Length: 356
Image 1 (cartoon, rainbow, N blue to C red):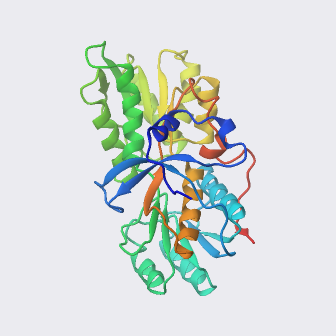
Image 2: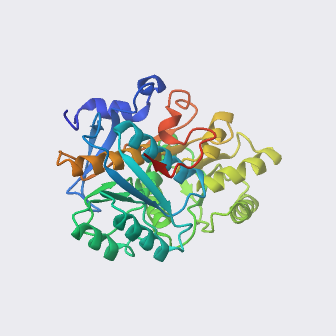
Image 3: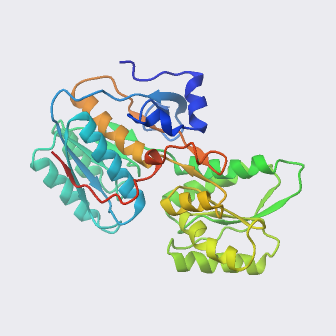
């Protein structure tokens, strides 16, 4: 099986992904490969990702997540669990309970390996804090796959993830294309999330670059915790100080929290909302016409690709070392044709911690 088809078809698939195309399988899927792998400034090439049909044996794959508290990681869980079933491998998932629990994640990974894991898929709590344990695991000949969050370790075997810088860029690009240079200026309130967080700074950098030179005027970024109350207060402050603001863009929590406020104040159609990543709440908001748009990073597919990478490495087969789903913006024009099960966990999905 040819792993990737680097054709114009990959770009065509990236914008609208018909649900019918994935009635039986999730693939082929529009993706992007980074070369050289594991570099921040590597060349990004469009590819069409096709996984193995089945594993040669029921490999034991350990999966470690920061937590399972929200729909995002539930989506990744759905991806790794369902792909394990499809491939015919065993999966054991552990979650540390939160981003403050680095030592717990390290201990869980060590326990997984001592219990006989053939490969480890890690959604990292820390960009650098897991490097020692990754080195230890890799030294035992056990491949480590970096999923979603990113790690700086040179000892990982593969990465299945996307860039939050690209997520921010795609959000800004969506606005810049609506309001190009020379058109009437529009003001945008921008809420990137907690100051200092790596993913926040990356999203902010991408968003600002995308709107540069357009008619989009970004107000001073309002940083804050991604709790609903904190974001709502920031939104209220911006609306109070800037009655002529046309858009509010930011985290998924920002967009979700602002819906009620926009409705209460009769601003629907006058102030539009955007998020720079997808959640079930944002998806529902777009469906109902209360949120304008959000890019999807297909977290379910990131989980699926990570499992396929693990099996390919274990079986000595060709694999992409650094790849992630093509990011595309979901808005009212395409939401009815996007396969929801590829970008979000199914409604009512409960955490799956093991696949035998």
